[in-house]
Length: 427
Ligand SMILES: [Zn+2]
Image 1 (tube, rainbow, N blue to C red):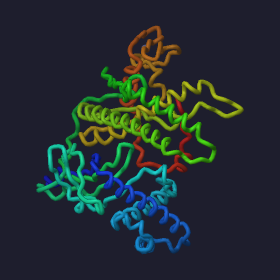
Image 2 (cartoon, rainbow, N blue to C red):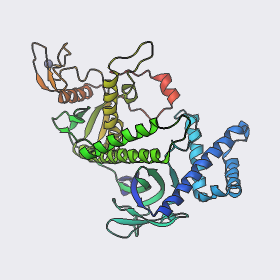
Image 3 (cartoon, rainbow, N blue to C red):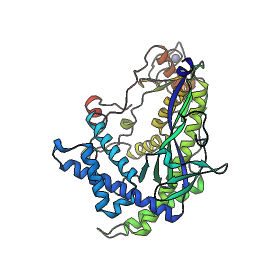
Image 4 (spheres, rainbow, N blue to C red):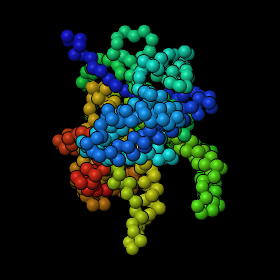
């Protein structure tokens, strides 16, 4: 019994790149388009019905009939169609319970392409080489993927370790497979490591209260940045040459694809860096304290209105781009689950004045901050000076020790709910 208690079920996702022939890729494209069309048909059907006739069973019957009557919908395997229905129903449930907005139609060019493979046992995942795995995709066949993490396959020691399903997702670099993995692992012991405050910034991405700072190079190297600039100019030129009402040319579409591929490459490098840094932090420290950031509010435009144009618009938009490139929200998400997996905890504190207060005397003295990088305390009795980001990180840790930790917010709230409750303020 005590053994039973010392284990916990853990669910995680693992994403791997698929290696497909053009024909296989086209087949999955068809499935994804069919899945999107299925969602749209379902949405139309659901919203047209009187409320008392809407039900999961009726929707199931409708989906079966649609797959029989519309031949291109049958490109999507029956299990995939069922998955669309389940996702659609869950979207409504999330809406009824106040977590999300109402489901909407999915537009062809704005929706990420994806296909669900809900049944793990049909995937028949196997490792065939140090770097390759094979997986079954319904109506496509057996395909190869990059093996970059150990997945529970083959003969297993316990029945709780398994792949429970997967999802195919397409981005600018092609089709990927995201596995849903379930495993039974020992419950982590409470982490004995020290407490640390973290300040997230634009110049220094992560500054820690013990003086460590994590930096990274620009995500794209020199030639890649030049290439991006060239492509953006080319796209701009082709857009200008287009007659009004004319649809996007194949050449312009191709340029857009190249731009997207470069952005996807940068994003992949950023993700890699974030994973490495957050893993290191979660392993070293027991309690990690961060500021609660209102990133959406921080990203507000400085443009203003026609009557009242804003000031420093290009500077603010540059800062916005820098904030978005740091993707703080994702770093915090990763820290939250990684600290939990290591037996530690992530604490959020209110963000007010952490960069203006002196971490030595605890006072806010006007004119204290010398520059973006250096903090000099203008309090006559103190006069401390040091790195500004380090100072902020120390303040964040002090806030936690003084008992200003915020209660964790459960789940995501819908846009309307957020608007009602929280008029966020930017600093
Ligand atoms: Zn001071």
